[in-house]
Every structure is written in C-alpha cells, then in structure tokens.
Image (cartoon, rainbow, N blue to C red; front, side, top):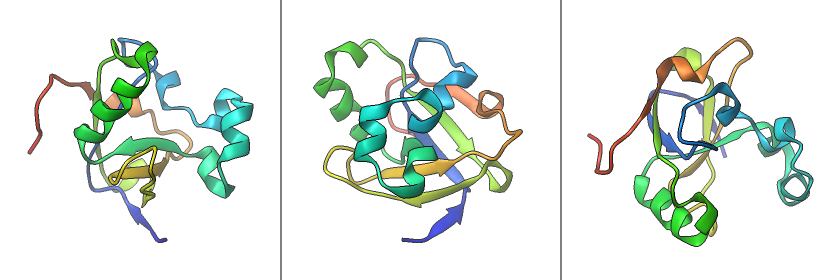
Length: 119
C-alpha cells in the first residue's frame, strides 16, 4: 500500500468530549500492549482516522463505553503528515493510518462536529 500526503477531511473519535493533543496519540505512544501485539509494523505509530463517518458510527455502536464521545473532523493538508488507506473488518472500508509529523499539533486544525454528512 502507498502513503500519500494529506489533502482531505478525515474523522476520528477523541478519548473525551474535548479535543486535546493526547487524543492524537498512537498505540505506541499510549503504551497499549495488546493493541501493539495485534498491529503490524509502522501502523503501531499511526493514528486511526476514517474518511466516512458511518464507519465511526458503526464502531461506536460496538463499544458502549465510546458511545457518548463526539466525532472530530480534521482537515489535513500537505504539512500535516501522510496517510495510508488501511481498510479492515474492524476499522471499516474507509479506515486510514495517519502519521503526524513531530511539531504538528492536530488541535490547531481539528473541529468537533455535529452529526451529519460533510461535503
């Protein structure tokens, strides 16, 4: 699979109802051993994002502890890192891995969203 420069909108679910820099940490950065064992290679240091909010709605229904969380929209541009399309059964068909460059703060271009489709 190829990586590409970010030039579009993606969505993710933060770990709380506020957007914080810690919401944009990889499995590796969060020290999640089980997830690290199940994830291969450089995906361990990426952040999961989705092109389609429907994938996130499906995931939220699967995990009751996440249902009350908001969905965050990030508008990614060339300097915001690279993404790779990584569809999976659990992540859904629009899942991507996003590698955020050192020094980039995603909170600067992330927006808490209302329900509904985006252009």
